[in-house]
Amino acid sequence: MARFIFQTECEIEGLADEIDFNQALRIIKGFMGTDDTLDALKGFEKRYEKAEIEAMKDDTHLNLDWDWRYEIFSYNLLVDGFGKLFAPKEAA
Image 1 (cartoon, rainbow, N blue to C red):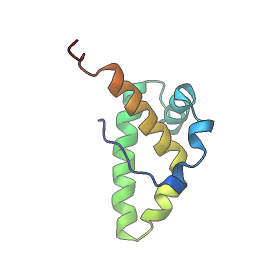
Image 2 (tube, rainbow, N blue to C red):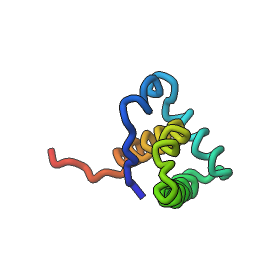
Image 3 (cartoon, rainbow, N blue to C red):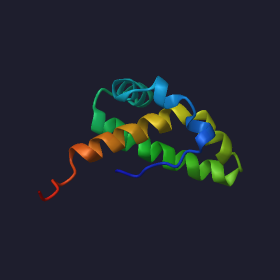
């Protein structure tokens, strides 16, 4: 896990004002159909990778990122938040 998914400024415009950490949890868990946060994050990453490969085959990859912009933003927000939580302590 911990792969950030690139989003353009256009794709994320206004989402930071709309989606906070708790909302991101609800979005990812709802999208993946599970209450387990880790399973939802891992599952989303796998689902996105599969969809990305398929979209590249039929040249709809630009639509995928736009259509999934809320889910991608939520995923990135959660990965960033959990990454900070589990990051090694910095030396004082």
